[in-house]
Image (cartoon, rainbow, N blue to C red):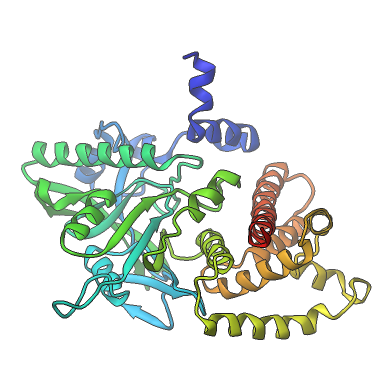
Length: 416
């Protein structure tokens, strides 16, 4: 295999290459965690020294392990489960999302979804759990941790474009790095957590030492394999799909093929349980509709939704203000798409209904509208920020494009 062929098979590397072209300014800097000790804002010299001498293949120099949970994290107003922040259910569909849980929280959510019989002899309901995160994570003593840079601990280190198998291999290497550090330090591990400081009205990062054993460290794949062994009826899939990722038809296929006739529910896990997860949920909802596996109650809900939405759609395009047209997703290329596709207008209408129903986990049309508004407000001269906003807006618009096209594709199959 040539170097060029090998490189084209590594989308996560290609994504970094394109990011250098898109935002060159950030690549001519060094991570703050690698700067000289005099510039550091952290007072504990022992902790700093520990971070600076790390030499793992994943947990390397200047890297910390930060607890996933953080102050001000979005929480659910309807389904409240301890250890599982921001659990959300799509109205009328057996589709759920949640932020990264603790091990105990994951068990509680699976029990809530009836993946494990409470009474001997009763039937469990299979859960299809899909992990959408694009960053390497690990569980230590039941709590999820993620890699961050020492002096930029809030900034996520997503690996845009990475595949599930490559990310799981990366997490296995991260576990090896942690276990090696535990053994070198006699069973102690330096960890970090984010706390709110009332005095400064800001969050701060606190380092602390934890006594742990190698058995306390698990990758997400190991965690869910263990839960399956404990009797939870579930299937675990890793399909990285963050908002920064380029929209691809193959991602739509990856999500739609999660559809399982034996499944009682579908659960999507992401960093915060909000944002790009709404896209994946919309795909599976559209697939469920197309295969007519929902109850008659759901069908009635859709009819009601169409009736209510038809009130706003009864306006002619000429009667809509530019602002209303943008909010409704009536972009030039999207309207051209609906004319080209068979069942185009119906496909867009169906997708818009699903987007509204998934709004508690992220609203795709609102995302597009947000990037457009931010571009309009941007002053002249900030070319790098403009390129970044344009890139994110185009990616969101392409997701909308794929949802409408996917719905048309399914409608054609239904008619056959």
